[in-house]
Image (cartoon, rainbow, N blue to C red; front, side, top):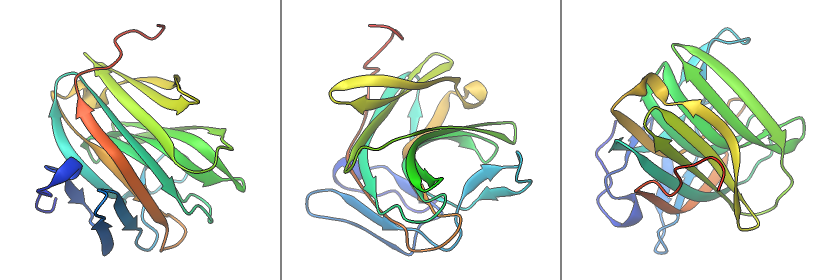
Amino acid sequence: MNTPHSAGIWSGLAWLNAPSDWSVAPDEALHAVSGLRTDFWQSTFYGFRRDDGHAFLRPVDGDFTAKVSFEGDYEHLYDQAGLMIRSNAENWIKLGVEWTDDTAHLSVVVTRNGLSDWSAQPFEKDGSVAIRVTRINSALILQWLDDGTWRMLRLAPSPENAATLHVGPYLCSPEREGFRARFSDFEIGEPQVRQLHE
């Protein structure tokens, strides 16, 4: 990874596969543009292994909640952005928005021991999307914000149940280059939810 960023809400985060075009605006929004045919995927169905997407990550120990708001210029198949929760190249989770079947989808990929598992549901909301992940012991609760209510996307095991995970925004564009995404309101802190049903 690159040298960690040193200021504002992005302090302590470092790029895995830094994009050539990225910046932090005065309002602390992170702007990034994807490189050519970048992706995070491991083996299942497609047969290839890709670990060259862009992820801006910070190490986190123990239980936590991480959240971010983001939007992207989704145009091409598999354009995607969101949050990455990572142990290593073969054990990670990404959640966010992905463009497939000519529309945006809320998307989660859970990758364990080199095999990726993808779930997606159509999503029509325009503008910025807020998502969060909460780690409680060996479980991750993945959620998105729907008109003020946090709704569950997935309950998944924590990658490798590792004590330290690397967490932060990600983007990639498996079919092209030049996908633009903007991230804001990034936070990592104490768990904000400890039960599935409140």
